[in-house]
Image 1 (spheres, rainbow, N blue to C red):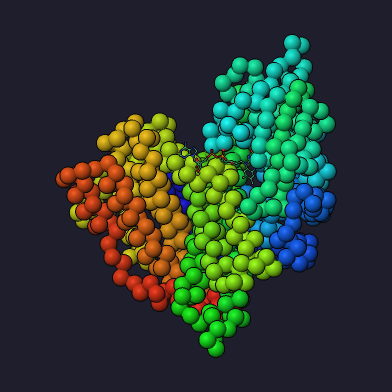
Image 2: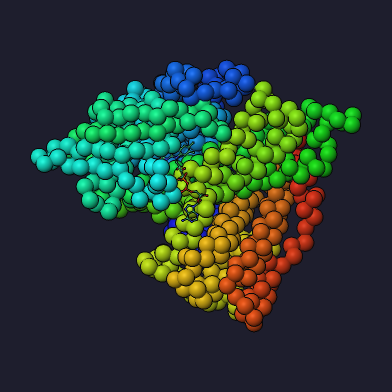
Amino acid sequence: MGQLLKGGEFIVKEDDYKSMFIPEEWTEEQLMIRDMVKDFCLQEIHGLGIERAALMDAEKDRELIIGLLEKSAELGLCGLSIDEEYGGMDLDFNTGLLFGEAIALGFSFATTIGAQTSIGSLPIVFYGTPEQKQKYLPGVASAKLKASYCLTEPTAGSDANSGKTRAVLSEDGTYYTLNGQKMWITNGGFADIFIVFAKINDDDKLSAFIVEKNFGGIELGKEEKKLGIKGSSTVQVFFSDCKVPAENLLSERGAGFKIALNILNTGRIKLAAGSIGGCKFALGRAVSYANERKQFDQPISNFGAMKYKIGEMVTKAFATESAIYRTGANIDKKTDELIASGMDKSEAKLTAVREYAVECAILKVYGSEALDYAVDEALQIHGGMGYAVETGVEMGYRDARITRIYEGTNEINRLLSVAELTKRAIQTKEIDLITPGKKIPAYIFGQMLPFKSKAGLDEESNIVQNIKAAFLLISGAAGNKLKKKMVDEQEIVMNLADILAEAYIAESLLMRIKKLNEKDGYDKEAMEVQTKLLKLHLYEALAKVRKAGQDAIGGYATGFEKKMMNYFLKVLTPRYDVNSKELRRAVADYAIKKNDYPFIA
Ligand SMILES: Cc1cc2nc3c(=O)[nH]c(=O)nc-3n(C[C@H](O)[C@H](O)[C@H](O)COP(=O)(O)OP(=O)(O)OC[C@H]3O[C@@H](n4cnc5c(N)ncnc54)[C@H](O)[C@@H]3O)c2cc1C
């Protein structure tokens, strides 16, 4: 088995595709869990009728939503990440992601159960004392306790550490008095427990508390009227002299920001998995409608303009999921490694997710943007019917929009992916970007190859290596020139983030195809289509890298340097001679034939 790469290290090393996890390797048990989640959504939510589900309203349908949470808990779905001793299933991380993909079928309920099982309870799972776990986690797993996460404030959104909520410790040290205001709190309308981030006394750093509704001193705002996910509760929460027992502090004083960020890391990759579930669902609806709907005496799926959209949707979903589950499995492997080295299980899980923070940020952005494309074009394929509530497609369009905003906006996540990688290169020196970076000009002149492909698909392997080289070259040159001023040049950092993301997604897709190529008895037709999908994806990735690279270079270089850098970029992103139209059609035709997302559904 190949050595497990560190988080972010993919940019300078070639990973071993043979030891990469691919979704074709889900076990029977994992697929059973996925199917149970899907069946739950189909029965309990789609079963209401799509129009009814689309019109679900957090205020009017509160009892229905609470009932859904409780029913899902009866199936064990609220305790997937909770230890068995506290009534949960303690599933591995990647199965948790598969759950996230499947629950996307639950529309806005996915947000409700997401807050219950992720941000609203993982702070206790990861940071709680045994007493706190014993007191709260069985209730969360059974949904007797509904959970929420209170970080955002009216003046503290992306800048979450600037919150004004205060917790003053009593003189005898037995309780805190909490005052402040939180907003956009998912599940807030009916939550029994709130994970609240606040500063103790005059601290600069946040701390985190488990706050029970029945501590008193808590007022709720009205349900927010939102663009989408209308069936999920979102309210403001006001704390006025709310008395919180001292033992309800999570971890230690001042650890709140660390807790918030670590929980968001897990949330980001889960959101990506949910987004891909949404992509596949939107695609399935779009393809079946395109096959049914006739205009000009033929199904609209016959038209190239429709095939374009279908081919793109399939490609984005397949490519992105390759990277999501590769990362999820790496998080599990890292967790096992850390436990074997003697680390406590909760600490190991957290450390493993933190290790892959660069990848989690990339996936959040890539997944949510793939979803936005899919819901937009699914609506377009439905024409006027897409605009009608009864099809449910307009709901998908509205619901998807939030994914680019919460769990850190996509701007923040783009900045973060590059900042985190840079930190590992410069501050903590975990990853050497400099030595491979220095080799790039020589590589470009064909004198030496810093990366060597370990397996076939040579042209495609070279493209992936070239994208990595483009990132190293431009980030290195821009960093040298701008130094600390780089953080003020966000446009350039965003360009770099896009190149970094293309490198990770393209490599993950390539590795999956290489592995599938060697899989005994693998479906030949699917393999043929997936190889075309790979070529199409790389063709498009190269174009994006070329554009982002030119933008970045133009943003900091002038004169000879600009000319030289653009020349290097041109060499690294050459014309990839494929017929993108035919590739996209082949992918689309396969989905049209299957009348659904054509691969692992
Ligand atoms: C439906 C919904 C549910 C939510 N659920 C929860 C929840 O359960 N708990 C919770 O705590 N929060 C929740 N949130 C809050 C959510 O996490 C925030 O809305 C999000 O983090 C963005 O903060 P903001 O809205 O204050 O936007 P701002 O931070 O004001 O951002 C506005 C714009 O400025 C950009 N921007 C901000 N800072 C920078 C920067 N440094 N560089 C470049 N661009 C920047 C942003 O990218 C964005 O485009 C929810 C929000 C919604 C809408």
